[in-house]
Length: 362
Image (cartoon, rainbow, N blue to C red; front, side, top):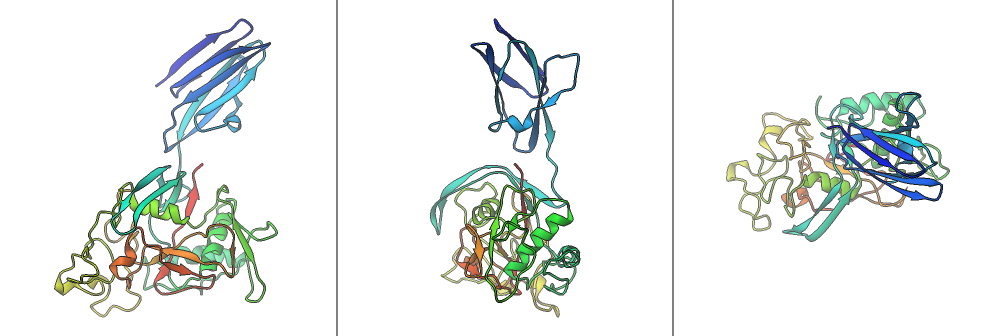
């Protein structure tokens, strides 16, 4: 939709022309005209604001950096005419396989954990857990560029399965290496403000995360849960309040009073038959993208491998991070959206642990 809005002042004239529907408000302020523009933003769109003193002559000046808040711009103009335009564009995912999670609040009463409220800004998140193939591409680049990671780190059952046996600190190094490999600004820095690329087992370190950088990072605890719930309020799991192997790869129980929400039938109790029996080998992971996605297109947010999240504040060798989602070996209580009882230290690794990454979208 295109809409024109014109205002005439005693000392100046301000025009606004755009492809995005906006409102314009002008007010005489001494020898200047105070101009305010406002428009409604779509969560999946980006916006540019431009201006120039002549509609016919000259280049449009990019004023996007002067937007003080989402959908708002204010400035003072001298006593002359000025033209504005606001254009929108579809935001592109940082890489294939990432989904946008729009900003908002998810609040409600979880049947097991009680009242909660999660508020997040929009971000991109991997739709699946990181596979060993993706790990190897980044790890090889990182090893060639000063990172303490290697293709020898981590394992997986076979191609298409999540990488496991990665330590927590290695998942952070992966994020930074992937960022630099793709020309983005790494999020994680050391105590001196340098990009975090290496460590040793003796000296302490402090790793800070700049969530405003445009590189990859681990999701925060709130971001992970917000994405897992996928807009559902007050549910145990990403799809509802009950669970079975039709929905997730976890250790199932039949008729266990500890897990009345597990609907598993007798013959399907234990590990998931599709990923364990018929001569299968440990770990009993499912291929990423197997089993149904949640409403936002995210796979295995319950079960398969438990996932590392960012710490609150800087990370040190004495810090602990929360691991979310549970794994193929987890009882049904550990794969609930609200469960945050499992933690990791900097060298924590397991055949049950993996990760996915996020990128800020603002």
